[in-house]
Image (cartoon, rainbow, N blue to C red; front, side, top):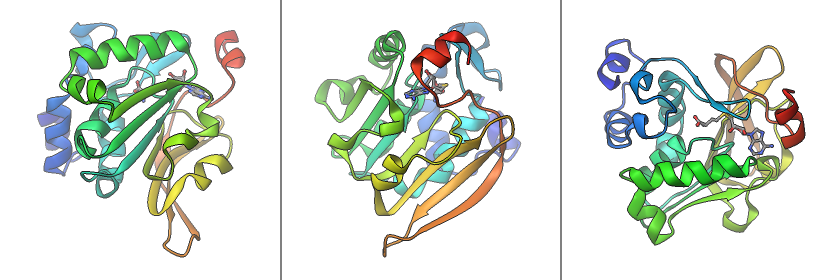
Amino acid sequence: MVEHLQRYGVISSMKVAEVMETIDRALFAPDGASAYADSPMAIGYNATISAPHMHATCLQLLEQNLQPGMHALDVGSGTGYLTACFAIMVGPQGRAVGVEHIPELVASSIKNIEKSAAAPLLKEGSLLVHAGDGRQGWPECAPYDAIHVGAAAPEIPQALLDQLKPGGRMVIPVGNMFQDLKVVDKNMDGSISIRSETSVRYVPLTSRDAQLRGY
Ligand code: SAH
């Protein structure tokens, strides 16, 4: 899978290739057999595990902000796949926090992580997954060098902007039917620069009730 993504130019970073080889997607996907296919898969509760090319794209966009010792937040952490990748990249001196609003997914993501190469980081406490509304971020561990949002927001939540460190970067899909993956940089003076990376299709960042109703 990783070689395929490298061959097609999705992965150019060695570090991202390495972390995606270290964290085995089959431990996180519902059906191990098709885990390496380049498509999203349903994980229940109207949620999906994102396609490998989206995981790779987001890891690459955030690579400079996922260096050892840095703090990362993964909003809508779902299966926990990217949270585990973040934890490996920031290492034991850093911190990777997942926030997911479906408690059953939080519980299953912790089980997935326990089977993965990120298990020691979970045990030592540099990797955490919390149940909560990710639109509020996770202020207890803020500010963050990197914030990833795994569900599409109608607009960028202010709480997430507030929890981004100066020099920090957030990657977030924004829109309803038509969504853009936005790269949001907080400059050292606190001002914000935003650009669109690509068009995407994510499940909405919404309330738990709306999601369980099918939006
Ligand atoms: N990166 C995850 C993506 C999961 S899909 C993965 O690849 O496994 C998006 C996730 O966002 C779903 O699990 C959904 O339950 C969650 N979500 C949607 N709205 C949310 C909110 N307001 N707070 C927290 N999680 C939310």
